[in-house]
Length: 436
Image (spheres, one colour):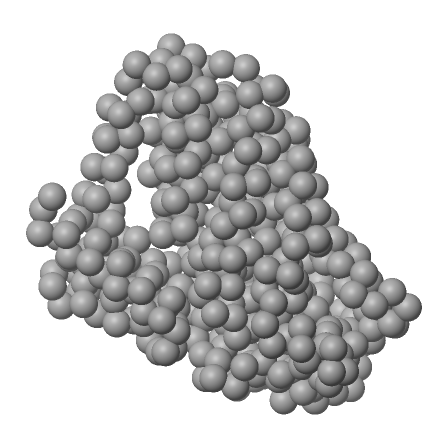
């Protein structure tokens, strides 16, 4: 291994250890790792600049502005009131029904804007019902990820894998071609979350509910999460129908245009945010207030680490080892190994980075075994999205990690079993619906 590869591995291990230790803010930890990589020359200043100006950061920042405009218009308050009315009759079951409704939208729209808008609603409804938001925010992220795997347009990862595969000479996927694999994963994964996620979290939130008091997020995490008790942000906004209609229309248009392939979500969301300011639906100062810098900086810092793995050759070396390591194995064994490697990489890098790195490897792997690349490509789609064991495998995990004031190990406790469950379901479904 080269010096850069060793340094990158050491920084990655230190960042993960610091996040598990949970004594320093997550965004500060990520920035520290990026600073070390920059100072040691593993990445260049232009790489760090690229991470902070990445499409993911632009898209998220713009979506935060649009979501804040919806909040200021009073529309979210109306949505919360309606959800509370539903959930008062059904209790926690009503919240799970609400999660399912939100998740179903993610089959056709990108999960990130859905969680940006849905997480505050889930948080405030749960608090109103004297239930802990922690019990529902991680399932919100996981459910939108799972349902996003059900169609080709449900997540940008699937579209990216499809694009990369077409460049390698493979036929394009149909919108519902992967549904026979994604749907069982979503149903079984959702059932697992409904039955076990609250029990696996355990701890203080259950005691709060039994005591009948409004639950409070651990105060040690308020600086880290920038949220704390939802009552701190419970200022009711007057309903402004015109501004609400414009904000909602711009949000839907931004997502629809991106889904139709007219422009990337970063471009459509950015244009939407600027349009809201130009139409005076939201002022420039209010737009700045709507940004969540702690989340954006955290993602940017982790992107720098992903860039370091690419620049140092660590990711390429791992790919070469994968191809040589499966030589002589059966196609099923190779498929299993590819899925597991992709899943592990997704926990460390961004899902988009993994899709770009692993898709060409999956095609080459299938060709080396003289079998159809189709099942291997589907495996990459599922594994590159099904990242549950860390807060950083997927953008929606980062959002709820900050908002809910979770600990790193909360994701490990709930997400690791979900990783294993979805792995088994995915391999069985791929084997049945996508023959070699």
